[in-house]
Length: 369
Image 1 (tube, rainbow, N blue to C red):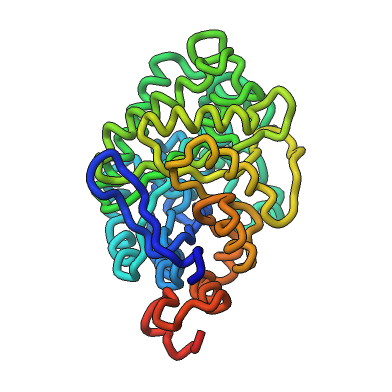
Image 2 (cartoon, one colour; image 1 turned 180 degrees about the vertical axis):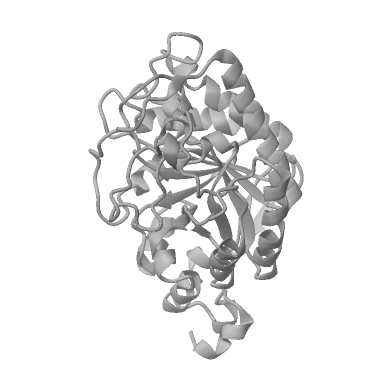
């Protein structure tokens, strides 16, 4: 029996937690498809996420859903900062469940990387890159510090009051996610967005209690985790995505991530996904599975957690090897799932799973996996 297609339990502070039918996770991937610029998901999101649920994923994550309008990467991002958005997510969650998959939502705030041109429809070809101008509907961004490290318009440094309000935004988003029926909330602390900006010395130049020492730079993340965990039902798992390493001397390194992951686990986070980078020019490695060692480091720091590896994991045998060697507990599939929404079903067949255990919609049995 393939380990990739054995069920796995995600723990929660109370109750049985959540059982996933297999260890494949659809990674959050921005769709830049909210044409009305109101953050409300619609038919595209149902089709996109629903297809991957029907294709056999154990856990399907939404794209980054902004916890406040100011925290959107672009004006075409989905959100969960109001009740209209929560109600729109509910039927999408229901369909994911109907296909046997668990539904997760990634809560996000872009911080200094907010208010940028969307990748769709092909802004690079039209010369539309970087920060949105005021004439295009752009807005003022906020972050731990003023910075030009992202090559965007410099954000305003957040005041203590703004930090406190932001933490409340995360908690309210978690409450709305529960109302929409999601099974898992994932806090986005990766890719150079707001929480990562607080964590990394490359983007955090504060001199107050939110900057400087490791304890100070991780304070905002700890407060967000605590607020979300308090608002999120105790019987549901809480997850987080880290950039495990900035790949820059003097930045946020994997040793920092492993240390903080242990603290996050004590605060109620039981699932970790390990990506990397997002602040400044990329200086890291590349190639198939290049981020797997980051997941392994966190797994060693928090053995009781469910830890997933992500990044250029495309081949089923490669994914299986990650698990059988104990490098991680699951795999997050991103770009490969964009190419093939049935990636888990194909992988299960290639790995020799019995026909009745290949996870996909019954309507597709005639595909003879």
